[in-house]
Length: 389
Ligand code: SF4
Image (cartoon, rainbow, N blue to C red; front, side):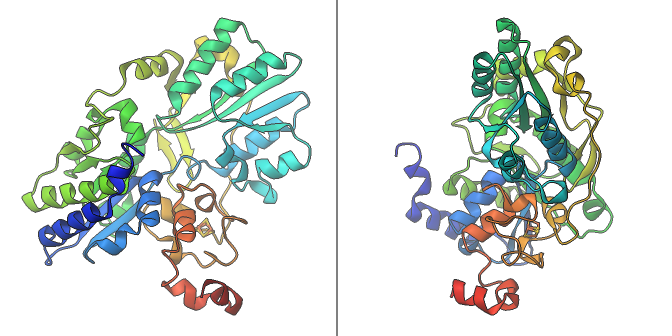
């Protein structure tokens, strides 16, 4: 496949691995956070860790939109869907995220709620046009990548005069999450999360550009390399970070030049600015309340704001006590540190959100078997060990 196969070439990957091994100094560790779940997925799927020297430490970040959605917001969506006359539309991954009381949107659907999986916000608009007798709510989640299509849906609904359409907005912002991690106790005080540099998001950066990361490089002296989601993109980004750290540089570099510019997509940013404004604070799973880290619908479009229309109040709900998603999303723990990883918690029966989406760290580790050699395999019940033998 053109423009994909070239970035999955095993010979080139081994050449990049050899260059990293030569340039990474044995006297130090390189602690690199891949912010995006897309990168986590690529690292697990293509076994990139196995190609890297032991002193390159890859740390998973919170950049998985489904994973960071707090339980309270899923509860809100389930409560909305339970109201008579409502059709709730959402992306497929959101359906299986565990909510309070052992529920999920999928289970609520099985109990009779009219919840529909859609591929895009345009599908939700179409459903609203077809079912003028019903109220259609689009449960919108995601980072800056999925925000412009939600803005388009609201503008389209206004243009069409669709009074039965609204959006439950849960869009979050990448730079605020990076700031939160860099300001965390684990990074600044305890030193339990050593962070030397970031692999910056691919799709998000295609929208917002590389410019927003310049602040982190300058203020926190951490290099950022924006990278695509293919294995060679990730390997190249690691090499670029190793070079910056060796040189004592902290700059924003762009490996993903085939899609990302410094200024990003002006049209998409204008659409978002037209419809949304910053929330003062928003709860993230794992990170807690993060100031100015999410968007809400502007008052001018309040007619399409489900939070206003249905007077939704959001409450904070703690995660399952056994689940380490919070620590994993902060980069403090690995999936195999969780006692129920691969035993009680699997993609078929997830306990936490990180096991739901393919971009979640737990799902990526489980699906691509990066955990089989880890301590969990020793601790697993005999039948599980037999299954993975
Ligand atoms: S394995 Fe499951 S329970 Fe453990 S941290 Fe991951 S999602 Fe949470």
